[in-house]
Amino acid sequence: MNRRLQHHEDAQATVLARMDAARVELLAATRALRVLSSARASEKYRVTGIARTVLQTPNAALIAALLVSSIVIGPRRLFVTAIRTALTAWITGTVSTFVGPKVRPETER
Image (cartoon, rainbow, N blue to C red; front, side):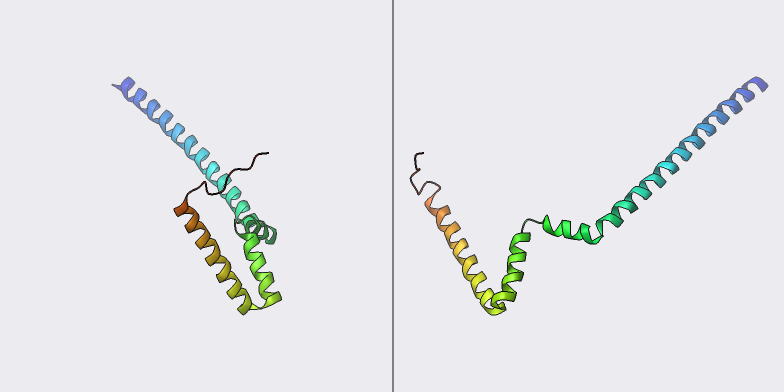
């Protein structure tokens, strides 16, 4: 009986030691991830990070053109021009959808 009890205590001590080692490894990995994520977050909100993010947006050129033209020609004329351009693009897209993709003859090169 003592042998059995001793074997059980040894096995239990081994399992507890492994659990403790795994816990230490997990805590170290968690701390490392926190350090990395905080470094990324601080980099994301720098001025250069914001400028890079804005310049990578799909409509960055359009937004910049609208801002510059609103300063140059004024907001009222800008609004009229933007609406006219948007309506023209929408009408052209709708008509080309109804007519079909092959309206123009292909040119030979």
